[in-house]
Image 1 (cartoon, rainbow, N blue to C red):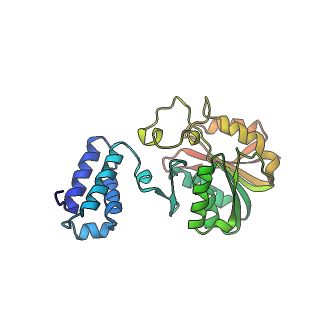
Image 2: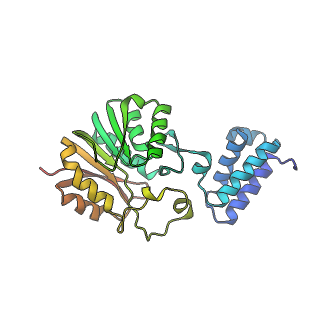
Image 3: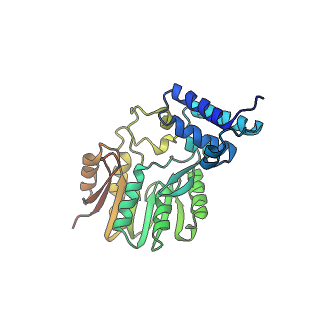
Length: 279
């Protein structure tokens, strides 16, 4: 196998990724090269003429081939940074999105202490972040998937909040007893006819993406179940699609909820709604 320098491997990989329209080609190539070689960005900048070992070259080529198939970098590496922490991800869980961070920020602003439940926890990104950021919070993370709950449990342990959390297998609030000071969820909210990029459609679990015929089924169930489980002055916070705020507001209004405040994402869209029970 021909020896290859870091700079050459990086440039070739970037060109390959650019050739299929990957907008983050330079960043993706660098991150995958760092992972394949176990070098830092500073190492690569300082020693661009350093040669890859045969094993490093093989691993890097495998990584690039997977990215050429539109597999996200986070899936290739098995982790995703969320709210400044590294979360393990597997095919069983949704890849946490930066948009969800504004929903977490809203929850941290509104709820300073007490007990919460995170419905459909996936990797545990929301629940774990709440506990890690505020030790006066404790929570239950639910999911219908055993494999997802195992990922969330591992993340809770790795990030030092396992003592503040419990894990429950079930759909939404089934089998749970309140009262909770916060119910929070990033439910599946995409319509089945939506055109998704291959990075999402081919690698995120569809059960965590698609929310029934109109993308709204989960909101209907959560709205119907939540009121008896909420303490007085408690909040119910849901993430939603960029164009769903009005219809989601209407669904929760039908079940006695009013909008308290909103979370705005980096693109300026309403990404989360915080509800309280109508008095």
